[in-house]
Image (tube, rainbow, N blue to C red; front, side, top):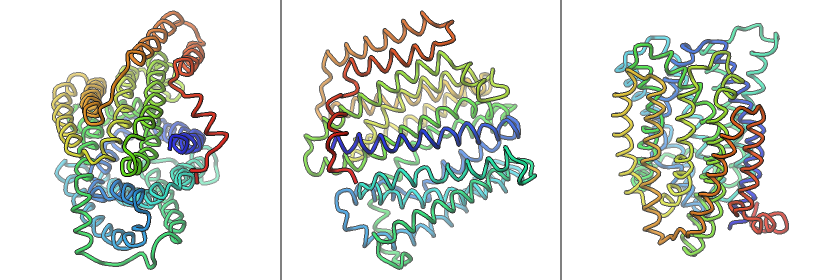
Length: 479
């Protein structure tokens, strides 16, 4: 199981390293530079609102499907058509609620137009994710990896035509950018549903309301968890734009810092997406097998996150000015967001394990407290500190939730943290602090940090050489 995890992870990360950063920093960031911070800030706020409410498109179906198919693959034949048909009704409900909230928040007619397209885009994204939940459940990780980057690949190709060539002779606007996204998502969903055809019953439209309501009842705890997590991770951009006196501009500043975090968040989601079906299957077959997988994935992700935090916070000015035309105001918000990345990675590991084990009550409780903390801090900090205050609120919230989930995992799975592990992390962090401060004025600081950090990850066994050797020599489980 560990070998499956590592091989799947390497292939998926390789594809994502090729595609997603280029889409984010080559296309998305260029669009922000072209249309301006304020215009992009409005888009960022609307995007977050559409994402927050997309729980209504899913109701926990994707996570529940991944878990059930990982444990019993044969159910995919019976479930897909009925569930997908029900999702069409969910989209109608989602769109009505989305527009209701938009009117309540007094958005302009232009904002409502953009939001309506974003709403359709979210339906396509969640429908593609539903197809991918089947691929993940079947352990078709290669196929899942390809679908996961297809929309970004299309965005790079089409976006480049508009941004870097004279072929279209069209000025980039936020509205055009949203329509480009629509086309990319539509093609990706079409490819995903086509590839899934041979694994599901056809036709894939079959109305069965009693079954759908029963299915939603079983998946609802997952839905509550998803919406709570979205609220405390995505509210910042919406509240900034609505509360601050110069809201659209501050939201744009926040978006500049958030973009790199979003890129890294995608890689964390790769871990989570691969680990969830593996944890689910292992918990069903042999719960003792979870601990080695948890150790392998946890050390790899958390040590990597610590290194990333040091590299990004100490070189924040360099990274941001490399990407944006004007980014000085984004440095401090960016640093707080990146420090919070470590807590996010802890959530990817321990939150995923608790979800696979069905401990949704504690996850929902911790997320609910996270929302209260996040909203309270944002209301207090945004009027006076703008984007930086919102970024600090995000850091505090993520850390609070991560600690609750971590300690609960220790209790439920009777995990023990050895003194050797604590000492290894202490050495790791201490040496990174020393190198980062010693070479703080060196133009090659990033090289020093990465070299020392990666070397220490191997020396301190955060990257298990034996597992890597087994991965390349023999891997019968990988499809």
